[in-house]
Amino acid sequence: MIRSIKLSNGIEVEYLDKGEGEAILLLHGLGSTKADWDFQIDTLSKYFRVIAPDLRGHGNSSKPEKREEYGVSLCAEDNVLLLKELKEDQCAVLGFSMGGAVAFEMAVNHPELISKLIIVNTAPDFNDLGDMGEEMIRERTKILKAIGIEPLAKQIAESMFPENEQIELRNVFYERLRKNPVSTYFNSFITLMEWGIGEKIKGIEVPTLVIASDQDYTPVSSKEAYSKKIKNSKLEVVRRSRHGVTMDQPTEFNRIILNFLTNV
Image (tube, rainbow, N blue to C red; front, side, top):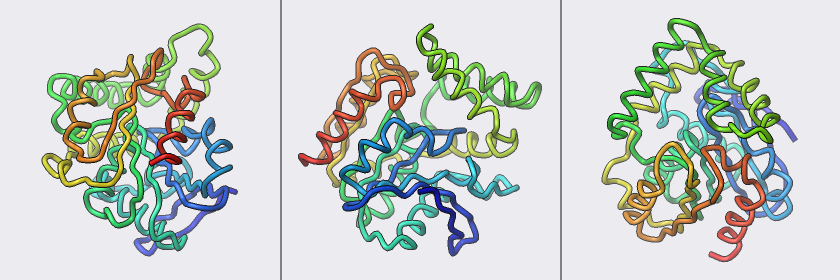
């Protein structure tokens, strides 16, 4: 069921709430919505209470006007407040891309809330991506300021789903991205690129699964490197997958996460 709630910090969050039992919080990627999880909801809700919010600045949740009202830490706090409102003292957290950054932030600052952590095609330090990060900032800023959101949405959708048989996924994702107001997308993007947890990653102790696609923007080796810094973690690699693994390889992705969630 889709619900909306106004948190104690004034942010209104739309979220999906389906299933019963142990809760699992699903956190979507930059410029997207809870629809990133469309291929996981039915499977997971057979075993868990699935909570999938639109992050601030995204979907049907609040879109603040000021840049200082955006950022990974604020998104993390929103979800801490959401769990409190939903009377969930602890849950599994599954974060994809930007959602993975939010999940990392929650694991560092609110470890008591997290029973298991799943990190998907993301990084613990977006502020330390080197030349790739700097080029991403330059390119996306230029496109957004000069042309707008639609060409960027097209570029991202085509890079994530380039195969002929993926045209439906590509079109659906493009339509989702193009609905973002330029200012809210930019504020979410630029504050994400300023974020990182640094050496705090070594303090994460909850059982952690790191999922990497073999054809993601960043190499598997980068995920392997930060996975080794987490005391109780393991890495799974999904073959024939790009960044949007929740969508381009849902069957294998669902198998991997269910195995982790039910066997830890």
